[in-house]
Image (cartoon, rainbow, N blue to C red; front, side, top):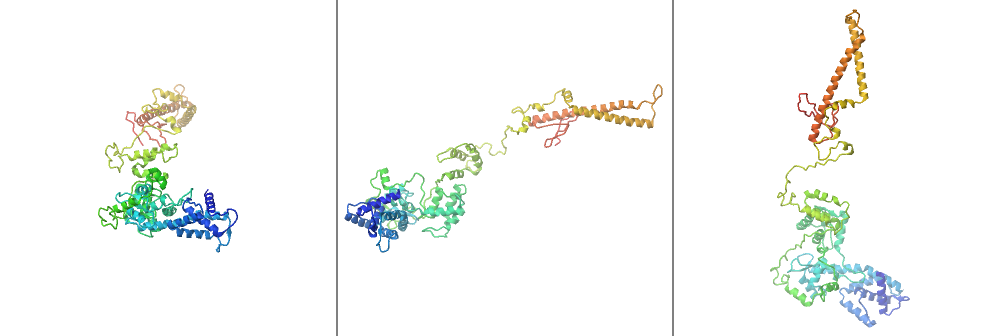
Length: 579
């Protein structure tokens, strides 16, 4: 589209010079047509003539009125001369001339940078004691008594963001904001405008490449800025103490780190480089309107101040350096400090860090907990306010340790007691042991306290293998004891019958010895049952106290990791814990 527009304008220039589009033309004729094209380019295409005489007259008038036309014509000759022969004896067709016209538009930014630097140098010469600021009266005076057309109305400058009215009695033009404003842009095309480049972008790009992150510690940034020169700021240099204080203030407002893409850091860069970095206004307070757009919006007939308005502003400024009343009631004119606004604005990636900076450190865990319900929510957008609302709610907690109202109406804030919740959750292996919720006094069925008569049931439920083992032990023990007794009696004494005085058979000795073994076994069984009963009763008491269904008791032993219970004495003593 841009090339098509350039070819169309060149075709118009050919028609103004009555040159044919077909066939080659001599280089001087082509160069003259390209000069007409360049004049139309500088006038944003608003250039026409009825005949050759009028065309020549308008071009001369433009060269006289256009500030810096000689420099612009010299730049054009340099660009065109590289595409033509030295003697200008060759010929060029329209296609070749169209390529030169496109190149003019592509490379004009280089010449525009030169004009922007010239404007910057001029405004620097008009500055007062505040770097990067020009008093509005001085600004208008330069328009009244020089070739510079510094004639924008004060309200239009304010809408552009180029007017510092922090002191209403002494409005000042902000140099970098004014240089980059729309009135200084060349409306060279219907598709784009050529404006002065933001020199601060080069400085910020250097910091971004060196830091490698969206935020950094203030000391690291200060060290880099102190060694970073600009067009009008030498390096290395020592940063002033107020400048360092501002940087650490930005870090404190953003949780100890300085976000590189926030409004406060851009404002700090404006203080560090007042002629290169523009002052960042809050969003919605400025607009890059063209003069026509501003007049349509406000209803003004002109965006430029009249001569009377400019002279009135000059006369009303009693604080100008050449005024006899200079210094009387001039406020902070003698101060070099630039205005500072605490309002912070961050890109979406930094908004959470901004809100974290407002929340006391003690409440960060609470803030993180409040965001757990966002896992299924959609990604946060600039318009979403739910999370910001929760953060504001956290920040409003007056019981935080760093709150000035801490301690008033804070309940048990000073108590060291931690909260307790009776809800229990067990792994699958413990589900059978889990006690029913809300009934801690009741022992679960698997661990119910044995009732009277349970001994017989317990004996009946004993496995058959254990009974076979017991019978075998009794038989072996009886045989062994009988054999030992028989051998002993045969050696030591002779037993005779009461009737026939014959020896008593030895196998009859098995009967008393078997009775003895059975009596011992019965005693042991009774003692074991007694121990089991007391062990279970003691376990049930502990379960009722601790509501812990994990107690087990078997043969008077305890499981690893469990509390071992003491078996009470038969005299009714209370059970106690052994470990």
